[in-house]
Image 1 (tube, rainbow, N blue to C red):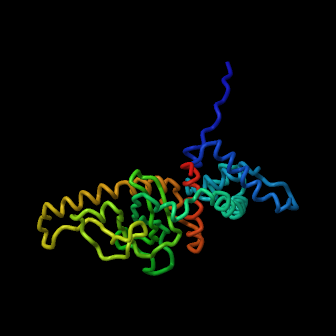
Image 2: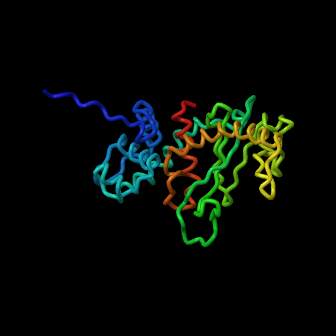
Image 3: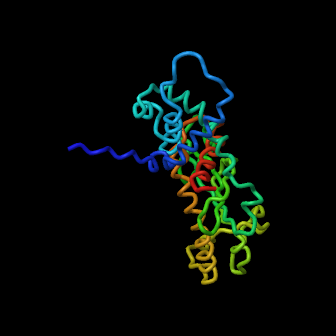
Length: 262
């Protein structure tokens, strides 16, 4: 007896369900409609498979050689497809990234930093994190109190800093003010939990309450960061050119907004 083969599930591999991939392919086709047909041999992969290939590279951070084996093409073909389509995917998903006024309107927004490892490169101590003992760049992620991604600037910082910012924390009289710039959401100072007192002394009950309050608020943005880092290219070690990393971060952020249905 023969059984009909079930369709392949793409959610865990590409990060998007088949319907969203189909819509994405349609947008890419429209964006490239005015380019005209190229000359030479036909493409080794159809447009749908090309989009899948780029999504797999971004979602799984697999090597181009491994992706070439999975898709039955050569590594140079994978490289050409990625370089041609990655900017197009960023373009066609731009409408899903909310504008800054919309992000901060009538809601609490918490901002926290996360490290994007880049692998140890010939940069000396530049971009080196003594805490993590590796090179990497810091990206600030904004989320609401429900853990929904709201903002991800493409500007990366060499120093790894982590801050939690919120209107609730700013309005709590027990919270500890940390030196820093005002938050985009409220203009209130940035706040983070206080460390243990010098000499190993116990924290006071008020300080413990402060830390518990701020840590509870930070958990929402930490969930958003975890979902954002399911795009493994920013989680398991970025191998491309550092000058292209902001564009890659922008692409996966817009894809994440697209996945969330913005």
